[in-house]
Image (cartoon, rainbow, N blue to C red):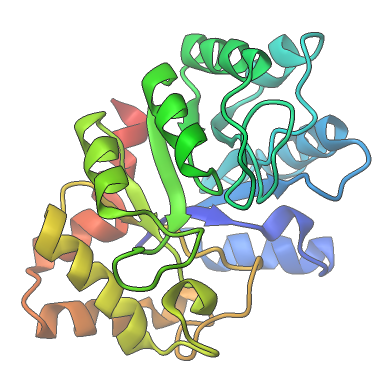
Length: 263
């Protein structure tokens, strides 16, 4: 069982039938369907359609990746949807915040948007933000997480969180989803041992209380040995061999994320 904080299933280029099958085959896991809006002509319509299409799956959760389309007129409509989080930017600066390759900070509209998210109980996702926007979002958000990332101390990718950022996020009550993305680990094609190393490094510095999984399935090429959730047992074995308890693994795989969104 896993609570995956981030997948790009809604915009993945496969048939709806295949997407249905994926959710049905993984009913024991909670899967976050993040609508990646960066290349969509009508993001709000696509988000609504995603919710309508997949709401019948009890294991589906909904999120927005890249809030570039937000404006004063549609904020109330966005926060009325059953979303668990909104990612503010994706790589570049937009109308609400600065992306990880940009330089901008949280804008006035971004602050207004976060206030509305706070009021609706929707978490603010700091993934893809630059450091300036990250800390400003952390200050403004009532419930903040980073849905999919790796550690900058392990590999200095602009998408990865520095130790100081992780510490600040934990202090704010947030959680961090470790992404199964080879680029974030500095690998052409990462293996399970590389992915497990990210969890070990995090736990050694910060413990396991805020540690979660955000695979980024369907948004990137899978790492070797973790193409589907049925291979997640291999990650559990890697972690237990290196000193994690079975409870630690349950917390990381499911309980930490579930607690974050239900309390």
